[in-house]
Image (cartoon, rainbow, N blue to C red; front, side, top):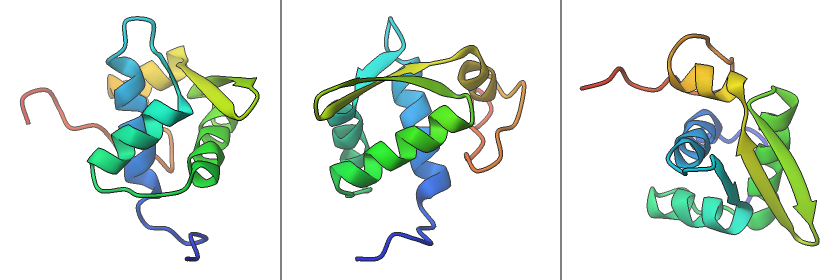
Length: 100
């Protein structure tokens, strides 16, 4: 399947940031992130998830640590600001307002 023009990317990126923001230490490894996406109807291979994490790192929303085939993502202040709706990172869906 060709994911080049994948329309779910902005939503998937928001799901990733939400999953990170729910963690006490604001980090998860790519396997858990893939499971979170799958539970919400986004079934993509590990390489696709890693590509999205790389993109989020380039945008300054996360930092990444690589351990063999696993990538550990940590939410940055910029990513947290996007989640609070204080800024907009183009290419990531905006979170809904509290209570919506």
